[in-house]
Image 1: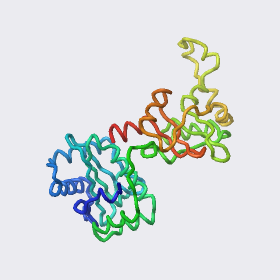
Image 2: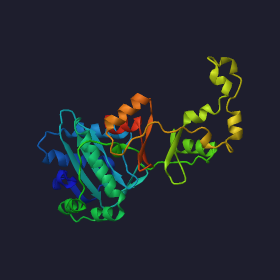
Image 3: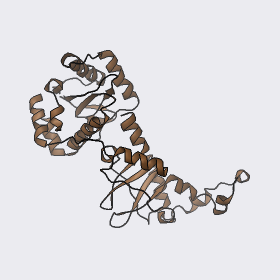
Image 4: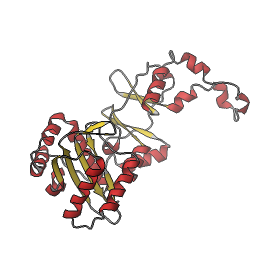
Length: 299
């Protein structure tokens, strides 16, 4: 299926003059209400989208805002495009295009495919610029058609994984590791060699274990050590201790084309919160249990 085949001229607005997000959502839903066969209760749908936005909206760094809502008793997916005449700010990002989705509970796979396609479009600067300069809805669909984006069946790890992955070398220090964990609010970092090939991984638990004395790991109860600050030594030496001392060899990894169910199985079987995604020995992403929760169960 082509991406262009799911787009409808009636649901595309070029050079719109609305800038308020509530007004844009309301306007696009009314477009659906007028043109779609399924009876749409606009106030209820708008409330559904706003509730989803309150949990954390989706704004791509490239300037695509993606409000969306799941509807009860709805087994279809409809997409509306809104290109503002002037960019506006949403979650600190200048929005160049709005892609609004209404989806059913059985259309998550297709939703992820469409979302991935628009993410790719917006990441291609020249293509995105061409799309944004479309003269009218028909021209917009024509430009999408020429780009040739296909929506393959079934969601894969590639559709939901984190792609801009922070990596470290074995020679990097625990201070660098701690700083990256803290500044980026993450708990897992892959380790690569000089060829950028994936050779290991390290988590916040690995870091914390380094602060616990070896003898303490053999005890059942550490309540008698309540006056000991186990991290004094770690803090004193974090500038000199290298990651290679605490990193682990990767026991499980996935290919980008692996299915979501395969990723879920590996996480549950190996009690993993994150799994590295590898292609040709190189890290291309990391998939986490939160990716599955946020993008599949609550996407």
